View 1: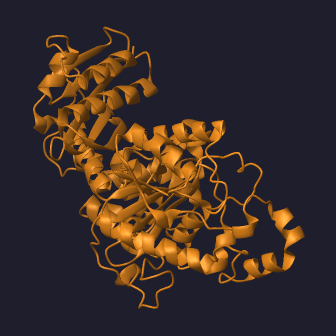
View 2: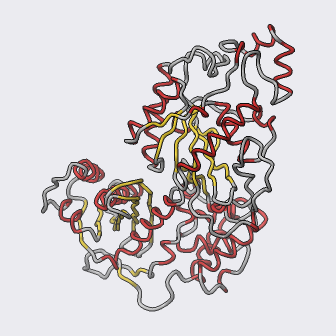
View 3: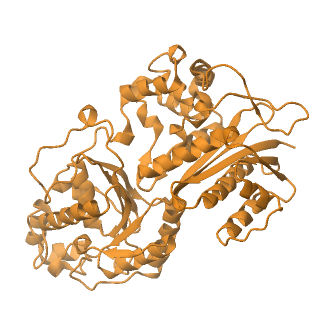
Length: 510
């Protein structure tokens, strides 16, 4: 029977406060890292974070081999004693987490051991990476982690020992040359092609995050490596050599004195998506403020702090949505359909799982408020109403289809399509909506600086926020598709830059 070691940790900066966990699965025979897991979980206590790290670590081990035996090592005396059955679990927050951990493997296949914090440095580093990512309004990305690089090298467990890997004496931690050699060996195999299992692992390295969509592969341009396959190969390479392997197409990482220095070279060559290189203009005063554009790319400050991130949720379906009828702020104000309510439940579950949203703001229209309340109830927060997030008033066109408007008022429709200053009869122009939405954006940025906020709104406001972030012309509104209950995200930095992180994500509805 296969055996694994799981090391897990969790922490909270405030207890309760911003929290995260980390977990690693280790082969006791070789000391090799087999899997890593980490996540920012929002505001929680240390104990909740520790337990969630345990559940994640056991889940990762189960994914590798559900028939395995597992030895868990943690520096939390509470978790170890409670899961070993020696201490009672009294706190109501701990009971469901402990039960979830106990269900991963059958009874008798998991043992627990307390270890000093110094021996749990890998999982501790993962937990801190997750909390650092949460501070930036992001989620931890496995392909960007350096936790495995910074730990001392492990040696196999001694025969007859506890099965826990030892620490190899001597040698620099995270040796760059060894990591590069492993990555090069992986790249050399079959022209960079990997087995199906490794391909799936590489695909998992791209992590979609609500509030951030960061992939370390973006830090290495296609021109910097031999082929796109090489980029995937880097992601699938041994974690201890992944960063050095990524840089191998740019510099000789074997000559680098330190893996972190090698990574810096990769970022210098191709740019760092986390700091917003190449992003468009950010908020100004009004919809199209004539101000000097903030510096972008290399000219931007090195440390912009935590951005304010707006996660943009289009409301769920109404009875008018599948009929593609104009449904703005001047019409019948429909509520959600049964499908729309189910969509709201699904997006609420997805956002709760990510744990990044800290506040919920909604358009005043009924369909948005219903969607927002469903999400807010799941997240345990209140809903704030912002009038500026309401949909365009389509005036005389409310409730009509596009074809019906073209048949009845072709000249007015053509004028509306041709100019952002033209409005439907009795309604609002896109220029007016843009000014309203930009003013609401600026107000919310002042209120939620450095936080991740869910804005539940409509097609036009979401497209407008994306367009303004990109510095795109008004006609860009007609070149974006937004499904009901879809998620988009824009991050706003302190220097005025904005970065579109996500557009029309609907995976949670499938």
